[in-house]
Image (cartoon, rainbow, N blue to C red):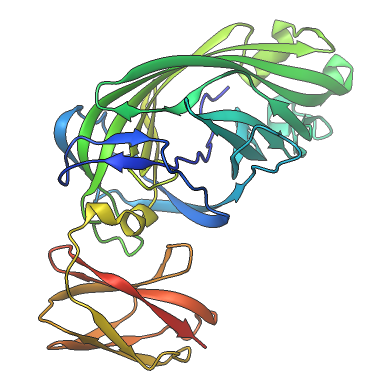
Length: 390
């Protein structure tokens, strides 16, 4: 069984820091959850990815990581959830069992001790077992289910800063159904039970650089580097009895099997999920996941320009042109169009002449409210200006 699952975790943080790249402290004070938004995370190729070096005032540069594919997630305020009364938020993701995958919603809680995984909701999902048993009528089924974790793993303990450590554990259960003619099984109830332990150590602080959605490098983002050493012990039961080896072996699992994984996450203030998450298995890096929106949401990582944008016309029609007047000399490196959730959705074409430039609005852009942001060649950012696209 694969050890990793994607869990979209909400980190609503307040930060104490002095200068860019300085040591930071993450706390829960004055945290305010969003009502909901969409997020686009990217999976990058893991070629050449090695274990990040810990220590003080580091710079981790991943700007050259090649893009593989994106995944859109939806995060929701769950403080009134009828399913998990202790939930604070939820995020869409998935659950994996070997090569099988089911859509899932992962629920998180929040209290004075930290943010923690509460439980999950799994959607019913079935697969044929032809490649395993040779019989196209044999099936593997994730049963629709809600499960509250037994025990608690803090994805973030408060307060958190460089050289902090903590360890926690929980039990996860997944209900399945198997149809395997060779064993006389027809929708037989199967339970996968996982005893899960995580050790978290903040091993570094500094700045991370990631690819943006236009594949250009982001400005440096202030982060803590956290190393997570995870261990899972798996057991399998069928009809309430321990599953026999001749049934588990074809799935590549066994009773009491131990899986280990090492994960490195880069956490930044004001960001609800890791800027970068790297999963390492026995064969090296297995997943490299990054969020370009971090570069736009975390303004503390950028030196702000005192320049201001004057935009006309506003509203502007789709496919039209914006005239942007800059009130001082400013060498524009790029313009970005953001939606109301802070996601970068377009890198419009810009024609610059002195303090003025023209920005082309994509004709396929849906009507609505957007924000135009300018960044100079040194990574300094002009505060974004609101525009209306008609």
